[in-house]
Every structure is written in structure tokens, then in C-alpha cells.
Picture 1 (tube, rainbow, N blue to C red):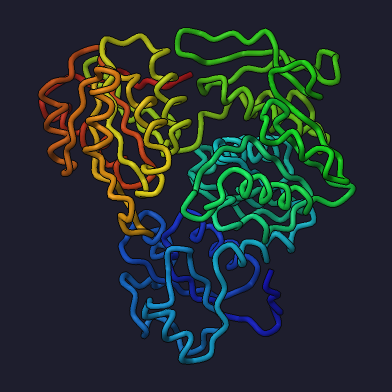
Picture 2: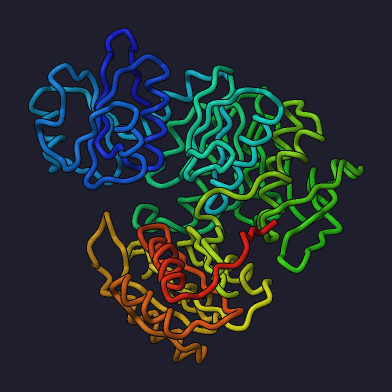
Length: 476
């Protein structure tokens, strides 16, 4: 990890400041006494927030965006050396640092950094832990990959020793973190454009992440995940496992779901009843996420009633199975799912709702992910009643694999007889759905990038059609 001497750094320029993570890190930097500037390719919610706060954020990347008195340039992984601002930084001999390195630096400023990792569930779990700390009055600093409704932001600047952050394995980003508590939720193959040796390279990376935890720290490990079982014996810190199997240190039993798939369950700690918990977000995967959060809370001495209340009030991070509207009995959800396991879990959650027909709109992210998980995507997407595929969104690679959304849609129909179409323009997707959906239908708009706009547009279109908006509905 690169070392920053704060005495020599006054102003930091962020290339890609509109990113979810970068925007939060820039705000934390402000709290730590740095001055900031930034740029992004297009305006967004985060750039608009900076502007409302009085900061001049440049739209578009140009050499002149970097202030004359800049001391450090921080950039996202999507930015390469041909970017005009990177060229300008090199010309002026300015130090540059990737986002992952700057986040690593920030973790050194907090004695108790809690880093949440895993292929799936990082945002939900880090948000749950954040909520527990907030309910316990521990005043944490927070940086997560989605908006937490209770703070209406993806970040929070606190004044205590606690820092809750997501720890992403892509390009080994999380190995720059210095954390006292680490959570590993699950491990699957993903980001194979970087992890070209597959699961063995990924397992090795997660082991290195786990070994960062000091002896007096805590590693929270999914004991049901076969790809993680070896890690427990390779670490010197406290290791606590969780899962559904009874050989875990913490496990959930007597899990019950209501008609909307919202669970309640008993938690068993070292063979003894620990407590009963309820969630207002659906799915077994969130039971496991909550278990890992409960272990962190227990380690930090948070009272059970505070943890229970935090979980009962957590409605989920934004873009995680979020209800965008219910018009004339037609429910429209959006979700960030972009890995086939996430897509499968989210579609299963949808099917727990009473519905007439389930429509899924999906925008794949990166050609490499479509290529390496083609069969898995095909199976996961087949579980709906009608599939609408949008074009592959790829912001960091060319289509070396010659794959397409059309190929996925055709495979879903050929293998599973699920009807599917490909539509490129968001407006055309909305028109297609508006002409066909009926009362009691459920529409899921899934993908990690711009496709969520379709959910908003569809709700507006249905309202314009004169359909009656249902009373405010939530997944509680």
C-alpha cells in the first residue's frame, strides 16, 4: 500500500468522483482536512450533491481540470493512462493513487475498521453492521456501495474509532485495507477478466485478505461455503463461523417466512439459544447476511435489543430488491443483481410474492462475465415468465469473446422454453411492457448499471396511462 504523508498533501483531485465509492471517499477526505476537486464523464446524483455543497465538479475529462495547487490525484480502476487528466498528472510529476489504495490509506486512520467482503451481499451486510453501530450510538464512519435509507447516503462521516466499508476483491482491491474485523460472506468465481486462473486464484486472494486481521481482531467466516473452509486453519486471529449447519459457531434455525418472503429465525451461539430476530428484507441469503452482522455486533458488545431493532428497521440498501412503485396492482422492482447467483436469488425472491406473471428486464455487465457464466445466466434467467434482455454494458473491456445479449436470450428460449426478446433502447422496453403488463403482474429490472432507469420510466409510463397508483407499499 502506498504511504501518504498528510503533512505534504493539502488538495486531492478525484478522477471519477461520481462513482459510488469515490464520492464517499472524497467526503471522508474532506472531513479529514483535505481540500478536494474532481471530475466525471457525466453528471449524476453524487456530482450534483458536491455542487450543492459548493464544490465545482468538472463534467468531462480534460487536463485543465486538475488545479494548479493539486498535491495528489486519485483515480478509479476504469481510468487508464491515456486519460487526459492522467497524462497531465504525469506531465506535472504529481503522485497518483488508485481508489483502492486511497481507501486503504483511510482504513489506517480508524483503529476499528470493519471490512465486509464476498462475491455477494457486501452492500447489504455492511449496511446492516452500520445500522447496528448507529443504533448503539457508536458514531461510525461508513462507506458502502449503495444508499442506506436511514442516512439517505452511501457514506457517513463519524467521529469514533469505527469505520465500516465494503472490501471488493476485484483487482485485489481489498488487500490494501487495514482492518481489525473482516467478514467473508461467500466465494464464487467472478471478475474472471482479472482472476484468469479461476477459483484457486480467488481463494488465495481471500486468504491474504483474511490474514490482514491482527491477533486480537475477528474474522467472520461463512462455514457453509466449501471454498472458505481452509481459511480458518490458516489465520492466527479469532475466527467465528456462521451458516445454517449446526457445526458452525453461530447458526440460524427455525427459519420461517411470511407471504412476502420476509424471514424470522432463531440464532444459536455455540450450541445455546442466543436470540430471535426478524428481517423486513426477503430471502435466506439475508438471513446469512444478518448472522454475520450479529457476530460483529456481539464481538463489539452491542446489546441484542439494539441489534434486533437495527435489523427490524433495515429496509435494505437502495437498488437491492427495491420497490419502485405499484400501479393498478402491477409491482415494479429494481435490483443491482449482475452475477448469475444474484440474479437467481433475486428472481426466487420475486416468485415468493403472489403474482400473475413475472417479467424480468436484465442488462448484463461486461462481456467477460457473460462469456464465463453463460450457462449459469441462462439457467437463472429462465425462471421468469418473460425475459427482456438489454445490450451488454461494458465500461472496461472490448467484446473479445464475441458474446451478446441476443445469444443469451436465444439460449434461454431454446433450453428452457422461456420466451425472451432483446430490446436496446430503454424507451422501447418501457413501451413493450406498458402494452402487455396486467394487474397482479410483477416486473423486475435487474443489473448493476444504467438499466435501473427503466423501472422509474415504467412507473411513470403506467401513471401517464391513467392507471391508479396503489397505496404506498413496502416489503415490510
